[in-house]
Every structure is written in C-alpha cells, then in structure tokens.
Length: 113
Image (tube, rainbow, N blue to C red; front, side, top):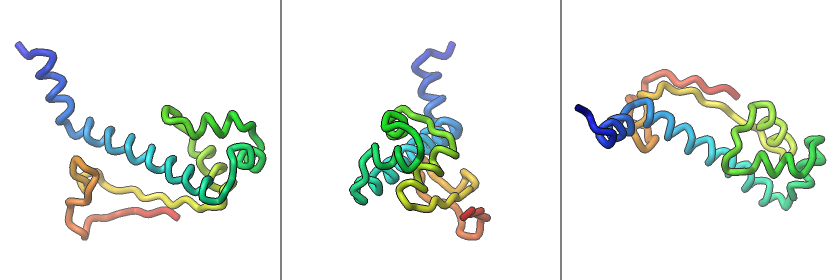
C-alpha cells in the first residue's frame, strides 16, 4: 500500500507539478517586474489607479502576492505605467525543473508582440 508521503513525493516529481510550480513562479516574477517599473518611475498606486480609472485599492489588490489578475487588467496596468508586454509561448519540454532551457534550439517558439 502506498503511503501519503510516497504519494506526495510522486506528485511533486511529476511533470504537471513541475510545470505548475514554474508557471506560478514566472507569474509572480512578472507582476513583481511591473511593480518595480512603477516604483522606478516614481508612480504611486494612486497615480496608476487614476490612469487606469480605478481606485487605489484596486491597484493594491492587483499588486498583492495572492492575486491572479485577468489579462485585461495586466494590459491596463502596463499601459498606465508606460510599458509594453510581450508574450512567449513555449513547449514545456524546453524547460527543466528550474525553468531553464534544456531543449535543442531548433524547437519552435511562438512569440507574440
């Protein structure tokens, strides 16, 4: 009989868990980068809120660690701080458990700008 600890260990070593963990980390780094740009530009949350047509609390919620913003909100925030977002879609076989590229360079990568 498989123990709970063994099941957890097996799940954590699965491709699905690795992919989900990587995507969650990249999402947080993405929002952190947007916040860093806002701060570098000397913009307050209230400044960004005014430009977005929302409240300061709305911007605060967007910047929270546990937020899962919609794409349209991300685009509006980026526009308010004066940046352009570029998207990249890659086959997950291109990444190892650390998110580092480990696949041959000739695999297809779709970049949307």
